[in-house]
Length: 429
Ligand code: AMP
Ligand code: MG
Image 1 (cartoon, rainbow, N blue to C red):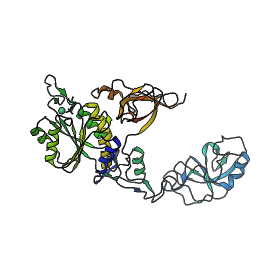
Image 2 (cartoon, protein in one colour):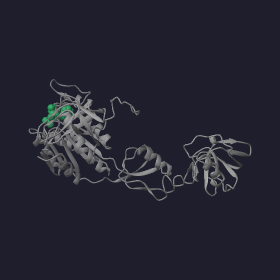
Image 3 (tube, protein in one colour):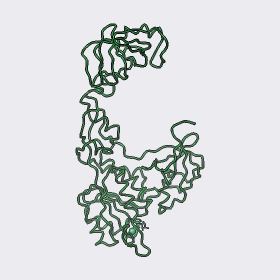
Image 4 (cartoon, protein in one colour):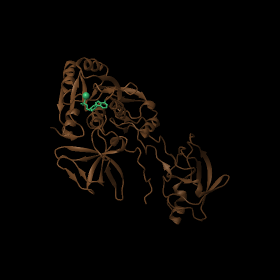
């Protein structure tokens, strides 16, 4: 028997990134960057105003500033103020080469580039009394640069502002667009073949003989493949015979990875193994010291990574998340392979068996001093609703069989961890 960590390391050792393809930004959400992206220009490209107001020289307003002891956080006060001549105006999209001279102010809009001039600052409009050709400065920020966004303060030219291996999120796409980028190089999304096995399994929408079941796993696994960034390709149901397994497994052409469901437990085990051997490759049939997640097979088939998942619906999805998901992330060149974990206090006493890492389905929520977690009740590996109700998996390590209520546990967030949980909101009580 091997540990979950060892199984994960064995799997990842044999897996490398797929090739690179170029996609438009609109298709890039959730894709993994193939290489660092370097800035072609500074962002912002030029010093510009953070406010609608007046660009003035610090020398003209410093006395006012020190008299009022003012800073960015002070509100306007009654004061004689400083009167300056409004010598020019710059709008967003405009440009001025005319310096701001002594005793002068330049009317300026948010986002407008600053005119040349020594030690300029921007005084917000609300802190002025505006005349026709002049402006009375009543209050100002402290020091040169107040209310000015400096060229390159966000991104400097040549800087690697997004690193290879990053899964692109909404702000990253905005950053890329701010650099004028229209297409990015990402790793190809793995096409994951899914084979279901069993005489008793039928796809929903087809008639169900007595005692048979509908194929629930494929729908769940297809969704998990998508969540992991892959493209699911359902290859069909193989019946428990060599011929049928041979036929359905024979459809893997064009796939980057293969997942089979069921048929790896003692009994049907040999059928699947025989057919996989015919297809070429090597499989290791492991017993991983983890529950749920009965017998699992991993290795290669016809040159692509292969994962034999258990048939029990909960086991198949929990196993997918522990073994297949990290592998699919690695194939995309992702730096983040694993689901995030947090610590929480368990509200229930947890009873398991020594020698196995138990991953119990739980509901994580906000408690008084931090996260609390409770289990979703019966944990049988066929009890699908308990996984649907869960937003996390509670880990009970191999060397523990009883965790008392109130103890701290490590919890793995499920990809849908934010779904269906009432949230108390952002305000502290
Ligand atoms: P097996 O690993 O083939 O022995 O299957 C273990 C259990 O999982 C059995 O109860 C099967 O009926 C069930 N099972 C196998 N494949 C599926 C599937 N695609 N959807 C739902 N249940 C399945
Ligand atoms: Mg079976």
